[in-house]
Length: 501
Ligand code: AHR
Image 1 (cartoon, rainbow, N blue to C red):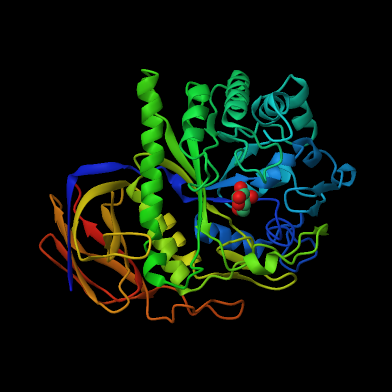
Image 2: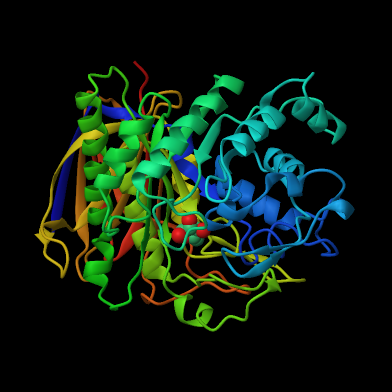
């Protein structure tokens, strides 16, 4: 079977914002305590943060980390996490029914994020708190000095402001499970006033307002429109959240779920533009897909969890090969929509529905999903090209006309490279992929790397990582046509050298 794809150097979607390779670290389960932070571990640094975990976070190349929640943030007092650790209060975390010790707080996370080369995306509490706590944390983090909160930061050891650029105005505020859940009217007004005041403190910041918790919320679409009516002139991005799972063990439908993600993105874009038109505004609101991932393996186990433990092992999905394929399809979908999706956060980063796992007192290891993310975050930079794809399609239980190939082509102008990411969704067919690169002078294939040939349910473990990329030789260049064989059920990355202008 053949798939023909055509791109042209001049026809572009958009430049990729590197924040699309974001992730998420919540005070939840063993993400922070027992994940990135484990004093006494043989690999811990002098502050208690594990060097082996830092190395894996750096290898993953995530550039941007949403923090500290999630549901957790809606009951969090950020002031609990500053000042001498011995004075910090232990609290009930009502979001996850656990104990929060506050050993890790603002300064610790800012120092750690610098070490792993990532920027922090700070979420504020608009559940149990409001405008006052919001303006104070911006002043604490971003104001240089000479005021109560900025001088307190200096006293606590950070002479220079943290300069946090991107802030989330709460989390999933439409969800009945959320501490301080609100109607769209209530949230819209609070988010607008908080945003206004936060930007009075620091006009250079960018703000993300909450969209619906997921597309199947009964208030979806109406929620987005009402919240944007209130906040449009004060905010910069609208959030989307979505988790996927193969509960029905139907791989055809599972791998088609990125088609649903694409539809979700297009719908939310349309709502943003509807409000833009209604307001006769020059401003465009872009999207922050700040929670996306696969989440279903751990549901049953977590329903039996005992409350009020410190850092219990919850939401610890162990991913398999088919999960890595879907994760690849989802990443490609985000990239194909990079004209509007400027921020995206894989939820989450360590231990909690995460690409990186740790053993308490033991090793840190890479899940199957680690690899497509790492390759995209490493090589998926530059400009996404518009494409035309001619390939067979199929219907699944929930989706129609699903192409057998999910693919994106990126032109990295700085390095004179084309990078192709592609998933072959077919269980049976080798697909001969023919990519015509119009207006490019193609030199050679630099690298063709694939993840394929595994049992769909194959997982990695702490001791072995069978599911990882391997080099393939099955590609060639003929003039400006790239030819590659995409094996059945495969994730593929092909990098091609092209001539400069
Ligand atoms: O990522 C896990 C949880 O999923 C987050 O805390 C919440 O925002 C979402 O419902």
